[in-house]
Length: 422
Ligand code: NCD
Ligand code: ZN
Image 1 (cartoon, rainbow, N blue to C red):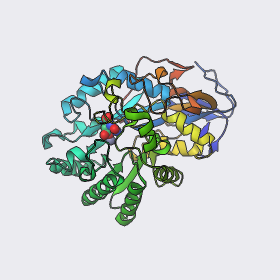
Image 2: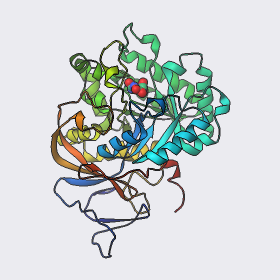
Image 3: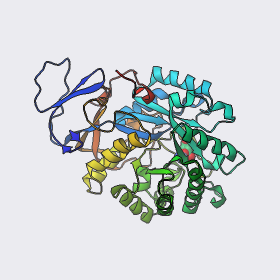
Image 4: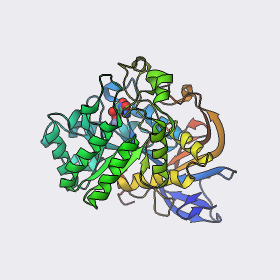
């Protein structure tokens, strides 16, 4: 079991969803018992994916809250945070309430929402902090356009409510004529711009899916110069650590994603950034599309599913000694819980929610998208040999994924309820 002080053996008792006792020997009778005493198997605090697209509403043919959270369970994530670029967009209180009600009925793991930049200021109401962990800004569509004033409004409101703002940072001025030509300068420039604006509001700003060495150095330069005026954090994704533009040429449109895949040096710099703490978190950017939308490089949508590949890929990096198991816990559990202020998660500790991700570090397999729970049954990692896999996901004491099966029909909760007493 992975504890704040390191790996140790013991028994964890969960009552009403919360960890009540951690002890060396089990002395009481229990209702049910899961035994993970096996070489290579470690129980981690439940992992949190800060960046997923569960789609649904009118895009349910691509993914739904049900299939997306089943993919999360199979991938070892106890909590997922859903992006607002749904159709229709999640940027009005009525739609937010509707989505929360839908998720309450369908979600297999726990979930949270980001609110999208609204059309009108009057859509920034009290419902937003009640049901959302933060905001999401798409700079291409919202900052470098006539909507910039609304971005300013979001930053102001978010600061007032002490909520984080997650940003997709790319500046379209640097884009080439082809759809996928988006150089690192586009990322670096956008980071500079948004940090500048955010510093006026003393924001909590999170740059998501950081993809380039240039982006990271701009991020870090800004972070140092701000001296705390903006609470600045960032994440990157497995595809920026393991794939390059060469894979895009080889695999074609399935590997198309925004920001695009970069070069070998970027990969190395980002991996180093994860180890030395310059990058705070890892997300999947689970972005499922219909396979028909992933055919032609020019017209294909950006993104591919990631919930069921992220943890096996990270565990493979651990087996290759490029990351430590503790890095995964820090990047995928501790940091997301802190950045988004999700209470009582991130560590296996008495009083915390009983969320766990059980991994088998020795399990070898080949990535096979036909096995995905996600509706998107393709991946640029298809056929890759990986070592290490989630074998069980537990949400508030209830196993949702066990022995290769999804064993829950629902019961997911909005993490905004995590702080309530009980
Ligand atoms: C995302 C999606 O498909 O929703 N795609 C992607 O390439 N990352 C949207 C986005 O983040 O641009
Ligand atoms: Zn994005």
